[in-house]
Length: 123
Image 1 (cartoon, rainbow, N blue to C red):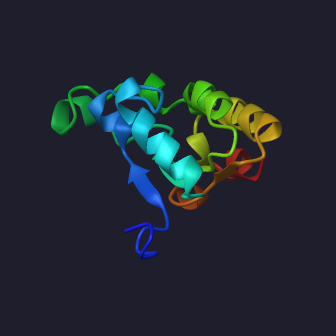
Image 2 (cartoon, rainbow, N blue to C red):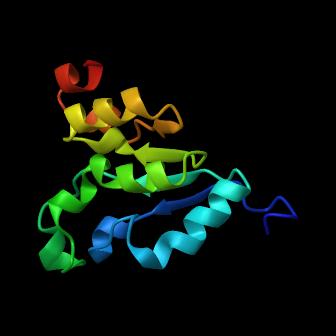
């Protein structure tokens, strides 16, 4: 798929819903491949809808959505590009810290551009 240019982005990975983080050893082969072929990873970050652990995803925990949990992966894979979906809200300070130190990290603003308070969004 990569050679045929059918795979342009790996994700959106909703690992948080399964109680997983990007630094889990099971994802190492994917991180290596994405880094090697310059395929960005789109990672679900932040929180979810009310009652998530009770309605669909018993392994979901809010702390798995913290963007700082990708830092070890970034250090190990310095050319890996990662997009933080929903810019890690409500972990705004953590998101800003990651963005400041790692220029290969990007954010998207989907959902949070209308869901969160305007002051948080514009900060």
